[in-house]
Amino acid sequence: MNTLSDPIVKRFEAVRQILIGSGALPSNAMQLACPSLPEAIVPRLLRAGADAESVTLALSEAFSMPVYSESLHDSLDYAADGASAWADGRLFVTDPFACQHLIRNPQLVLPKEALDRHRGETGLIPVQPSAHSEAARDPSLSPEAEQILHEWIALAIDRQASDLHIVPRDNEAVEIKMRRNGLLLTLREERMVMSEKCNYRLISNTLLTLSGNQHGVYNTPKDGSLEVPLRGRTFFIRVNMCPVTIGRKVWGSFTLRIVAGYQRSVQTLDQLALGLSFVQALRRIVAMNSGLFLLTGPTGAGKTTTFYALVMEILRRNHSQISIKTLEDPIEMQIPGIDQIQINDDIGMSYSAGLRALLRADPDVILIGEIRDEETARLACRASLTGHLVLSTLHTNNSLGAIERLRNLGIHSHLIADTLAAVSAQRLVRQVCPYCATREYDEAGWEATCLLGLPPGEFGPVARPEGCERCEHSGYRGRICIAETLFLDSRLAGRISDGAGLAPLYDTARAQGFRGLWDHATDLVHAGQTTWAECLRILPEPPGEPFRVPESHTLPLQLTFTENYAS
Ligand SMILES: [Zn+2]
Image (tube, rainbow, N blue to C red; front, side, top):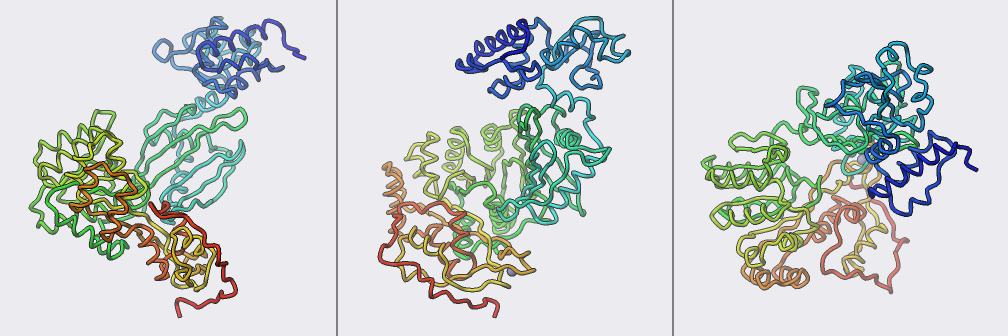
């Protein structure tokens, strides 16, 4: 039974109706019942899917209360209870259902100082209740919070992590995790209230402020960046904040990507663990004067590192008598002798705008951080037709996928055939620790040989990671590259021009000796460099290969033996 008075239920129904009418709630939300506690009304509407802004506007309409606006009112002074504030002689509340008593009788709650400034008018603060009111009371920066953040970042950097995750687990605890070698590991757990001077809200506010965002607002995702000096280097870090709702509170869940700073200088093609065949393929690109070269792979596959090494090699080969210009987002490392341009969408410096400007500046080689729209793709093709070597990346599963992706971006098959010189795909897999690996048959090998359709004889003993002190008991040390490169010869270009699909293109490439990611992976597994399990985790399924499980063979577990690699 509802114990609320009729006016409150009527107000609830009015707010619900406004939200359905504005599309902030689906029409079946008509069945949403009024909770028995008035302070549960707004959280229920938010949980039903209405966004905080729509709820505020609906409350404003139903209660005839104005919404606080930075441009119209003085800045807000929050009361100790966090649910109310005053500005410009007006009392502002976050949730009029929860603050009925306050609206009717502010003398009971507000301190005298507040009352003196409050002249009997009420308004709304346009954010989610509780989360914001607490946040807004907190300062935007605190030295204690900065110190703790610095410690966490240093912890991740010292362990060579690529990402640091700061994840509120419940309203009490926050988990600090890091991604290293592609795997997410928990570093430590902290209480939300860390000390008298510092809590998680303060840390979130500080991180938002340091990364160039407004603090205290947690209802929408935020992006930013910050630079952290550590051990004589500067680390460039990209910050992403996602709101997570736990109970009635909204917290910021942060992902910090350590984009640059680990290396002091660009590594050469020979210094990177790229593998001989990939380095040879890249040297063929270096020798080209024009054409389009695409490198594909997901984020974190090492594409930028490969490109920097490639550009350095081009510079060296041409004795620096060449103009190389790059469009990057962000510039991860400064390369002497190269003009690097930072992409900035906020000021209109998009990839396509940058590329148009750059083409007028007479470059020989152009590196485009990423092709993600039709215009950039079109300009890149045109530039490679007019005597430029154009290098760029695409997000596709494998090298053949790039052709499909360019077609989807609206590039005609003829133009692709005329401009595309080569496409590579690369992935990083963890390398087996040489100090502790043993050798044996494993089940993942069975799965991989089935996936590749290899004869059962191919399923031999492979390295088995054991774990020792040198690899922190993970069985792996560092990462190595698995790659494939597809060069377009006249026959393949002809098939592309004819509009052939991926399967016939794959067969044509195969017939000309193309070796795919799984071929390279098989070599590395047989050489004891990585494992089938690692390849199955990282690599996409091979194109054109059937997935078939041989029926007449079972896993020969009785053959398991071990043999130490290091011996
Ligand atoms: Zn080891």
